[in-house]
Image (cartoon, helix red, strand yellow):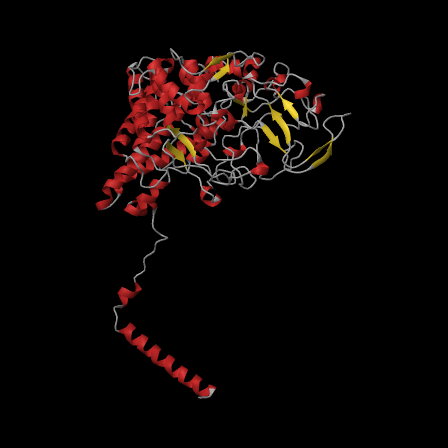
Length: 617
């Protein structure tokens, strides 16, 4: 065996030979060819976006802002006949609440919710405009041309989507159609009718190009453009204040486009399959995060989320990343007995949007699957709470894990006897029993805690980390069940019967999916009278009315971001908000000018031109 010194000497010789060969090869090569440097980091946006790969990346930028836009619920849910951030309904008339949702003095052009709505929509419009404007600069697209045309159509769809939301909220609005590359001080409000014309133009052009199935799930499709066209034509047909350029022909167009969606996107058989699956008892939870059938036949277009908070995170958004709809609806069980704070057992319920008591009375609790999905009827202990005293002077009880601690009784089956009530109010039961007419009116006590409203459970996801926005639920912006109700509403307003018949046929298709074709579907005859237990069927047996459609849209799309638009479109905002929402009815601030929001003060202040404010603000 060679000694160590000999091995080292041989290795040095080998290194010298290798180095000599390398230098010989280098000297014999074209040094210009070897030293060419390609700087990727110094490329400009114009250079990058002019390539097919860069333009493809640019096309992805129009979708992420749909997440914070979907979270701007203050202007779409509260202040309607369904939701309020208030819970103390007994204080109506004695506490002068001036919150934005009551349409009181705080609803001004300086309101943050109004500004955010304006800013985020125009941010996304500029991204869409950038995509559309830069298409002409793509060099030698070759085989990418056909795909590039689809991406342009996606930009037109997103632009139309954002303009449709803005024109409904604000009326006449600025309507830039080109990329904004520098500050523009001149602001001109375009008449609403012109905005609707542009929206329909964008969507019609998009429909002609978009594929039936997207190359990447979550991109806009032909069906999404058709669904939005159905909404737009229906809304223009109502012709708010004769300002939208609408006519009776729009209702036929709405029904025709709704039929296209219905044909392409069949309803799923079970309504519960559309939303995250969960057990109402967290101590017997058999489901986990993202346990949902997101890619089902009924969802036409949805906002995409994932389990990765980094990919969900956005600029100007302070949430944890991901869908926050699980945490924004009332009420919070955290201070009930048998609870523990800040855990994923019931996760977080901030109560930004609490369901109004009359809304329970729109459902048949015995047959309607949407009632069971939307509302938690029983709250279960997740920790032991031994020797708990329900109320002063009442003997303590032992609460074990899995015991019911609060029951919210169905509106049609109130607890009327003490044998059915909890010991906290002198009854026999070891848990609190709260009737619909008592929601929000029971005095503070150890037993009931601070939030005495049932949880709106529709979007709740089990097993996700505690926090505001860790949800993985793909929030649906368009479902084909809406197309049925769009068709029904259009026929009520004068459109001809459609592919499945009359308005009643379309309407009952949605009711029967939730209730069953042979089951009773009985709601309260007067939902706003919380003591009245008389009922009426909400299955159509004759003529369908606009109020029937609004009731059914409330049941079907609760919390999905459509309600303010429904009431605005049909002219029912003031009537129904005052009847269902005790804060609005009691304070009586709401007026006709509240059918439009104020133009944000920041927009007016920054403009060099004279931007007229909407009347009443």
